[in-house]
Amino acid sequence: MITSRELAADMLTQYEIDKKNASLRTIFYNTVSSAKTVDIPVRTSSYGLFIETLKRLNTIDYLLIRFVKKNRFRNWDPFLRNLLRIATLELKFNYDYTINVEEIVYKLIHKRWGKEGAKYAKNVLRRIKEFDLEGTLNKLGQSEQMSLRYFHSTFLVNRFVKIFGQDEAVDLMQKNNEKKTVWLRANTLKSSVEEAVQALQEEGTAVKQDNYYTEVFSLVESENPVPLTPIFRDRVIIIQDKASVAAVYALDPKPGEHVLDACAAPGMKTSLISAKMRNTGTITAIDNNEARLNKMKELLKLAGVENVEFVLADSRKFSEGKYDKILLDAPCSSSGVIQSSPEIKWRLNQKQVNLYSFIQKDLLKNTLKLLKKKGTLVFSTCSIFPEEGEQIIDTVKEKVTIIKPKIPGSKGYEGYAFSPKLKRLFPHKHDTQGFFICKMKLK
Image 1 (cartoon, rainbow, N blue to C red):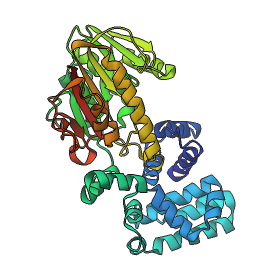
Image 2 (image 1 turned 120 degrees about the horizontal axis):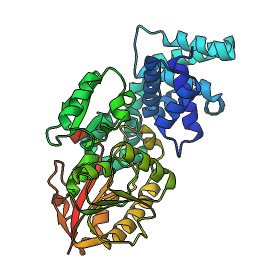
Image 3 (image 1 turned 90 degrees about the vertical axis):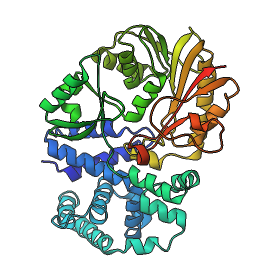
Image 4 (image 1 turned 60 degrees about the vertical axis):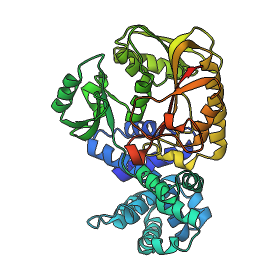
């Protein structure tokens, strides 16, 4: 039977093949499906090794390249390279003295490459285990030291320090490396909150109700993964981060209104908007990707949503109708979701941030034209950067009145007169994704 380490190494290999477009969940499901792995503990363990290795990829590679020539490391068989990455994770960052990692890896490599390759790998791991990483890091410059100690690119280290200062930047990076809180939402289109909680309990799932959002719960423990439970498959329960819920609460949709969801897929916010509208009125849900839109149609039907009309279009150019409420949850750098998507750390750069900022400005400029005179628009991004928040609002401040939404959160960044009326949510402060939320009306 294939082991969790072998599965995780296969997942990392698939990630290497398509770093730019990799979906970690898709890689996981494709890998376990190909291996015909149905054992839940093996599946869970393999995903954990995959994610935890990916979180620390820069430092793991730093260690391996010290004891393996760089060219050899890069040209190794991908499975071997990734198996050693996983072993390095276990030896340096997730050590369990009851497990002989070197011997386990020796046997796995011996099975595929023979005795010599296994001996070489075992020797590398022995040297890594004995290596004084902390002492070596202390000799490096601040940016590189923080990058390797807190497992973020130097680009992110420098940006976070500039935004927050060093101490808070460390708090954020440490939180990004922790296991993310799973937030669940009761879908009130299909059951009451009380019925949803009872159904969760019957599935062996313990939750804690949020203090502000009555239909939102943090997952405490579960006998089985929530995505494998019937109440999730039937969308009685929806997995949705609390920050995403906050954006809809800021919008405050009412029954009978005409609402535009300008960048709607995958549809979790759309389903909550529908629930707040009690399936009345009309939601125009726009996305410019046909595959995502079709998937969204399936999921919203499953969730019991009946008041949505779907439009395949680019919201930078869409010009049909006038709306009481508009939610513009714009595409962004996703710098606020690193905790659940660690691969973002290794591909994000300033060029991407600037590109998304440019797109967001066009989206906001056009969607404001679609707002009724007394209507409200909520602009949100799952980004930490001011280029995808305060700086976007600064471009329209003469045209709009900013309204402080009645939701918990921190104010916007300093340096903008309207910052006290904005909301920002952070992983290290609010146990959510990093989110920017601004509510506005036309002047």
